[in-house]
Length: 145
Image (cartoon, rainbow, N blue to C red):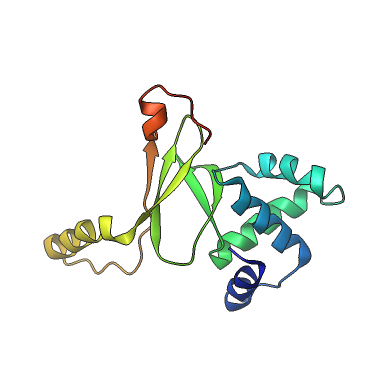
């Protein structure tokens, strides 16, 4: 994601565009895997020593609200955060190495259509995250995540 596209998505969601938000979004996108807010703060403070922990946490919430980032949750707890592309998609999250792979809506559409056909429920939105092991981790190979 470019700084311009991040700024556009923040504005479209009614969020302010700030230097800190752009820095946090850029770092989240460059890491390329799920991270906790604390891990992201640790990553950022070496490049941006003046950024505060609370700023990173608040910024992540603004990025989630604008669709720039996604909060991954499991068992009612925040599992991590990941950068999100604007197209509707879902995630495969590796429990071992932290790699997050986007999967297109095409995989989920047949499920949604069947739910609607069987129940009459009209689905307006869906967020689906699959948790398990990526191919290298499942094969016992070291993964760079």
